[in-house]
Image (tube, rainbow, N blue to C red; front, side, top):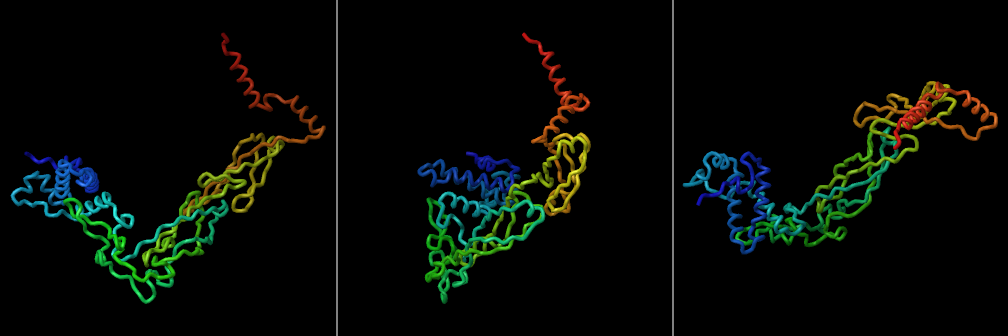
Length: 377
């Protein structure tokens, strides 16, 4: 009976990458492993076949020979399958962890008991002025730090962690699983490779304690909502002297009472009087840097018209570029008029023409034509 093609067994193309090959093997091995298919002889045979296929294709020289000569490359002492390469061992170890889990959260033993601390997140709210000019802020972060009493070792003063007798300090133990010998996390030391017989009283053997720390954070000019700042090594302290994690600061920017931001540009609505919009004039506005800028309003300016102040917007993060400030005119209708003011406005309205109010005149003319031309049933 002819042997199945190795590539077909793993479900990959002959041009597949090493990563694709490894992924396909893990999927097939997980599917056909005897411990997931107890009593199923076909699954056991299939498992052996995919193992044989991967051992051949994961080795560059064997794969090249197989691509050229097929199965004949390994017949009559032509190479065999003596244990596979490092890639094969690594893939098998990953599969065993997926199948059987283990102690210590499935993490591989480090052999020295040291574990990296967790990364931490800190949410920080700033105002738009801080985002404009940048600032240095001080924050309080509750986190785990190395225990001073034991210098982070977790062992009582005068003693040291000892090598785990179960795994001889490797953090992994071998066990027979079906017909296969596998490795899993050591149950005695939880993969650390060391045990503490006399734990430190201050930290209960963890090598770290919880404290609040004051940290200085540099916020550069131009940051946007959602910007992330990383403080390397300022996260949670590692277990038993392990390296610390990182602290990630996520910035959010408070809404501003006058300015709205869109990237590097700022927008601001400025009310102007009806008279100034009609006759034209000037308005003085404050910009985000605290300075004043004069905006010239042309005669007959309509509500909603925008005026651009170049270079008065937000700085671009890590750049010399600066956005613009867009001023949007909002014509204000006068209120609480005197009798004389009412008379003057009524007189003006009576004498106004289509030339005085071209937009409203054109609007109502178009509306009239539209409805006059509609055919009614």
